[in-house]
Length: 315
Ligand code: TPP
Image 1: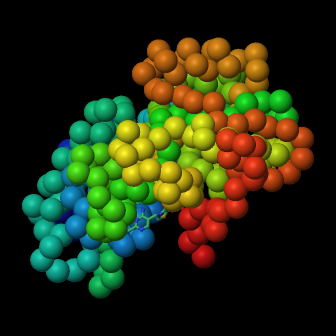
Image 2 (image 1 turned 180 degrees about the horizontal axis):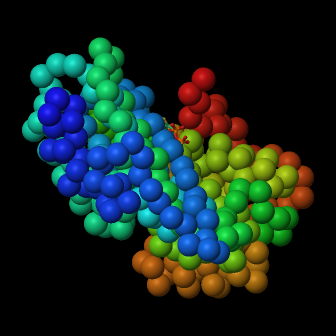
Image 3 (image 1 turned 135 degrees about the vertical axis):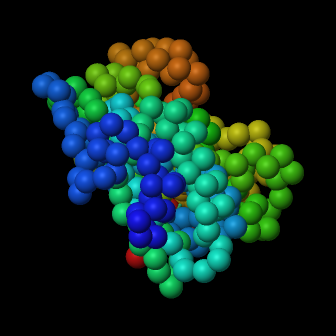
């Protein structure tokens, strides 16, 4: 067996599900029962762009999978399977020990989220480590949550707390301190909100990856509405609160939250709160939608706050 094939057999075959045909053929074969459709999303993570070179291999695989699963959750689909592409820097660091830890993390999250590996590709490079996954989710035909369904009169909600990962990156870069380690953990390990059955409850949904303000703009643009964001209402974790109000802009524009942003009609607010409570997922009302365009970030006196940036920009 050549190096690549024994590498795949050693590390990735234990992760493979039935539809992968044991990673022995050119394709996986997946069937879609009548009345269902597949939600498909792909995300790439590049060393020094999406993660730090000394992030542990155990959490890297899990972060990759979880960022993708967050997109599946945003569309209201149930996680099903994924493919994995790894581009490995040549050199001693990314050896069998490194990959065993990477695969152990993936294996743990496969069990947690009910997905298996379908296939993928393995290449080497003289550049940085690049990890890419494509995740497949299933949902009943026509029930997907979209970004374009929000309406004037809806309220705006968010799951979890906002800004922890962006602050966590600053702690790992030595720019701020968080002795609890909570913020760094949130940077390394997002908590995708799979398992919330919000189809038919909310009018629009998306996951927050580029920063709350910028992702509000995406919902506002796609739905052709205006959003008023009550910045005081945006939930902060105890660790983020310890750092004080000076970090508001970083929290709202830093990104990497992988929480859900939801537009809910008034008649379904109780159901939204109940579904999230039963799933053990905190959910908070953070604003309102009205006719018009654009996003206004308001302070507690109702004045507009101008931030220097809206969120993460690759280009
Ligand atoms: N620097 C490092 C080392 N790690 C980070 N995660 C960031 C900066 C912040 N960051 C990088 S990409 C990104 C953020 C907030 C946005 C999310 O990534 P993207 O590829 O745009 O994901 P998508 O929106 O496509 O899901």
